[in-house]
Length: 183
Image 1 (cartoon, one colour):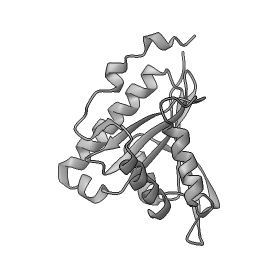
Image 2 (tube, helix red, strand yellow):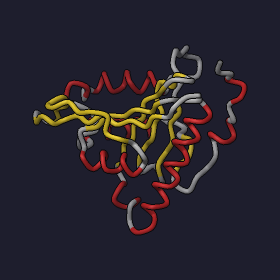
Image 3 (cartoon, helix red, strand yellow):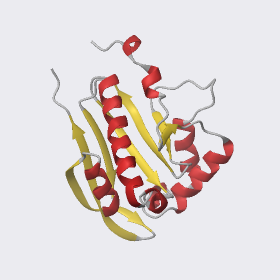
């Protein structure tokens, strides 16, 4: 049985060169909302409604006095060049991962890309170990993000043809996962 008292919060808050705990501010949340709505293939047309995006952000980043029924951890990538979210963590089972980059080209120049991948793998392993997860899953229509996922040890778990629409154009949505056998 999972015991939340065993979580090493210092390990989860560790500052990496390219990842740090995301502390939302009004300005950062407005910027993130804009990237979700306008960023290439970030979210499907049916979800790119400002009120829906605000509702999602409120769900994941509620005011401190707001009751929540989920547990999620978010990290800034680089100097707020993106955000990495481990969403709806269900200890001893699974969580979903979201990665949105808007400063990706700068991050992946030369050796920085290799360092970023190594740190990303380390962070994913820490999350899996601390919460005793068997699965981390993600989905994307963006083939470059599929390739990035593979570098982070994700495997393509399936696809859905025409399951994602962006600016009216249909895309295949790829499902990715990292799985770990339980003991």
